[in-house]
Length: 355
Ligand SMILES: *Cc1c(COP(=O)(O)O)cnc(C)c1O
Image (cartoon, rainbow, N blue to C red; front, side, top):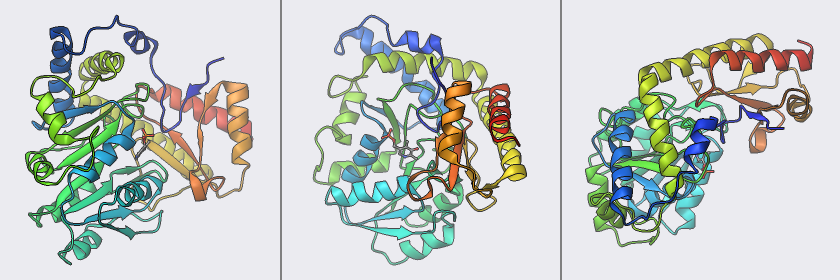
């Protein structure tokens, strides 16, 4: 029996979108392929409020994170860390031999613009990584305000992991001058994992051209060169591209502002429910619009709750991540999930726990 996913990735995929993955193959050097590539592009640009090219990576989000730091750091990278995925980005940066420092903030505290300003004022850095929506903690870091600070440092590129935020909340790539903003498609895009997207600014492409290449598969200069021909350097996951195109058509039909409003509405419902029965892990004012990380204040057995929801209701929520496993649990309200479905999950939890 299929268990409906209310996990913060992967998320539930609609059957009609799954069918798109079974579209008969085309050759990746054929005009049909370039048409598909070209059809996706303006829709992604619209979703991301940008005219920058949006490159496609046949990998999960981690590949695009690796691409950013291997291509876009000439001097030294500042990794802002306040959760598991931002910590991973630091490990990816260091693991590729790219000079970097982690700036650690407690996991329940948002990264503040002043903190970033203080670090950049040292003059050591020419790139900074930030996770917009920390999926491990349900934290939405104040990207717009941080971007304002970074913009005061003309040589510093702002690299953003928006994996669980993109397609669920507004990202004004153009207005906020984001140099690299990435996401995998198995979160708020509501597609199966295996493809990632990233909008890349002109100055980021210039930087990529000047940095000695550290990566072959994820080389941004090569990817951009192919992009200009509506192609990818190597054979991409074409089934994913059909599914992405169809999903973008549906997103634009719903209206992207409406889509964001639906996410905000679901978030408000889960947040008030969590406050009534438990608590919310991150500090107030920075709660994620796409998932809620519930603080287990009444010390329920989280693993047992998850097991019973799967066994009795065929639905899956997520335990806390890493160090906060058992101390928190996470309910995703993202992708194509509707308000009534989220209400159903909350009722199921209440029944299981006798709330
Ligand atoms: C899921 C996630 C990732 C990692 O994604 P993969 O697709 O598993 O590589 C990175 N960052 C954030 C914020 C995520 O939510």
